Structures are given as C-alpha cells and as structure tokens.
Length: 117
Length: 304
Image (cartoon, rainbow over the protein chains, first blue to last red):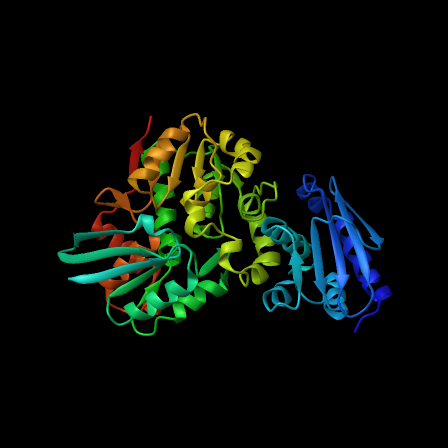
C-alpha cells in the first residue's frame, strides 16, 4: 500500500516529466482536460489539469473531471512513477478509467511517451 | 479447387466470394466479416480450420513493424492461435514485399510518386515496407499514426521518429483491445465527423493519401482536390465514396477480382496456398517470384 504523500510524489514526477518534454507539450496543445486520480484503499485524491500543453497538479478532488483514474494506491504510485505501465492493470480491471475511449487512449499514449521504452 | 477464406473483424456488408484461376489452378476465395465480434471470429476460425487450404486474417494485423522490430498484437495472435492446422496469415508478410514493389512501380512507370511528392500515410506501422520505400524515394512524408490512432495532432515526418515512438508505445499498446486502436465492425461504415473536421488539413495538404483504407475512410473530408489514393481493400462502393470526396486517382496494391480488390491477407493466403509450404518457411523471395509469375500490377483507376 502507498501513502497519499507517495502518490503525490509520483504525480509530481509525472507532471515534471511531461512539462519538460517539448514534444509532449506540442502534441497536447489541443487537449485541455481535467483528470482526477482517486485511490481506493487510502484517502487520496489529486487533480491534474492539462491546459494548452502544460500540466498542473494539485491535491484534492475536482467536481467535473473529464477523466477519473481509479485504482489502489500501490498501482497508482507505480504507474505515475513509471514502474508499471497502465495497460496490464487496465486490461485486468485493477485500474479503471472513467471517460471517453479517445481520452483513455490518449492518456495511455502520454504515459507511454513519458515512461515507455 | 483450392479454398481460401479471409475472416475479418470488419463489416459483413463487405462479404464477397469469387472464383479465379491462377497459374492454372482454380481458387474459391471468400471474405467473411464478423461485424467487430471477436468471439464470433474465433468461432469461425475454429470451424474453418482443417476445412480450407489457407486462411487470411482481416480487419486487424497480427504483426506491426517499425524498422527491424516486430510487434505482436495480442488480439491478432489470439485469432492466429485459434487455427491449428490450416496455414493462416495476416498479410503483413506480403505487405512488406508487395507494397515496396508497388512504390517502385509507381515511381518508375507513372508520375504519381516522385521525389518531393507530399504523402499523407494514415498509419505506417501496419505497412512499414510502403512507408520506408516512399521515404527512400524522397517523398515529403507525413505519417499519421498518432493523429488517426490516438487523436494526437502530431505529424511524424521521418521513419526514424516512427521507430522511436513505436519503441516506446507499441510494446504496451499491442496489448490493448484492437477496437480501441483501429476502426472495426460498424465503425468501418461511418465517419468520425468531429475528427474529420479537425484533421481535414492533413488530407488537403497531401498529393497522395496512402495506407489502410478503413482508417483513411473514417477521417476523410469532402472537397479533396484530385489527390491520389494508394491503398488495398476497396469495393465498388468505396470507389464511389472516394469519387464523392474528390479524390483523383485510386491505386490499389492488390489485384482486382470481379470488381473489387481484396485485402493483402487474402492475397497472401492465396500465395501460401499456391506455394503449398508452411508459412514459417515462406521467404520474401518466394512472394516476389510468385508475384512476377502471376504478372500482378497495381490497379490504377482514374476517378475524376
């Protein structure tokens, strides 16, 4: 089990890696979305806001997110640290993402472009 | 008579059956779509296994290529492994040889492809041979893999960048259900209107639009200005669709049987049936030799 601060740290790493990647910023200039990250086993909510190619992180929920990423704390921390890809937990149901299929695929791409290879 | 069946995840509306004679041998070639129903496709494959001479897998690829690396689509592999006895192919082996040859043929025998020609290739990892051949020819390439498969408006300009992005993403994306990455079933008969508008400029800017027909169809805007379409699987209805959109010339890489060009998987299955040896033992030279003996040339149709 990961703690709320550990999830926060993993999300900070994800956010930093996104923001210092010029290609990712170009790729996502058109994709303004609010992504809420919710742990199922600890009290932990975060909100990522993508706006014109930049990502901002804050702790806490959002009332109307475009995407909601839900999993146990360990899986969330692993994914956002890049220790685990989201594909397997998504396929086996450990990771649930609420939102449009197009947005889910795009989030998956972003994550792979940061951590993949 | 040899029987070849293509089992596709695509629409059953495109089902077709023809009899042709190739190198003195008669072939009964059929295409059977399962409207995106993966389980129905598996059941049909099991039913056909051992009953026909070769099977083609349509509507999805098993193998994707970027450079020298090969990536295996999990859903495609499940379909391939459902067949135990009959040779089964997905067309990727033939694409890598035939489609390179088609690019060379067009460069040498037509004015449709030359150095500097602006080409939009809607997806490259499913036909890397074509992508590489056009790049080597010096075409001004825009690869739409991220645009049309992920909705990311980022045109890739070189095969090196395709390889780099593929290396990061494909090992994982190939594990996703195929319908999340590629239009299957009913999606093959409709257009994504929002993305048609959003991505229209990539079509308008190109002189040649190349690649998978279902993918290019799903996002193709109206008001094209005589662009050349380079693809493989088209029906008479598809030809009218392209004419309506304003395309100027249609080039199909596979030959026409009774008014339509079949997918590469069908042609590869036919070639494997002619060769009569296990697919694993078939080499690109075997295909090239057969294609020469069959005198296959790309079909070029003026639409305007």
